Image (cartoon, rainbow, N blue to C red; front, side):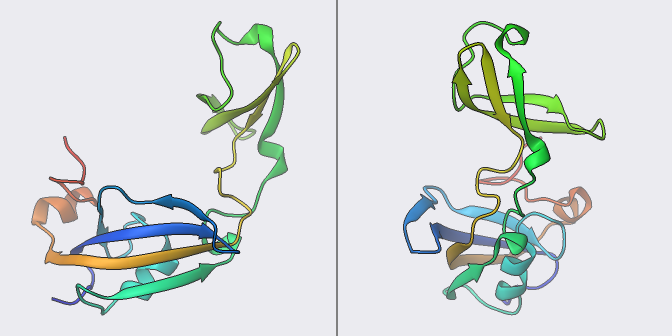
Length: 158
């Protein structure tokens, strides 16, 4: 079966930086609903469209096509007193950005009585290489299409 709109794609992936240094490798297969549902990066969908199980590709993506450009307005310094005890570097907190919408911030550094937060995706601003191998393709169920995501193993559970 070919990958097309409303198919469920199972794949293995590796993400490396522009020089080829491995950043992340899938332990479990990634499973997503193909066809413009924002379940993976648009350039990945475009590269896999029309392909079948067994297809392998390495994509070189610029920051704008991967996790976006860095937005320095999402980097913040907040007094440590405003945080609960036990805050640690690498921890993530839910907050609000400048326009009031919810944003996840990562604790980047604790310097004296100041906590440095960053609301950018950890890979924002980086050129990346995605190594992809399609291991399965199937038709999506009506419920998956209605809910706009995959259900079951490695998918979403309600």
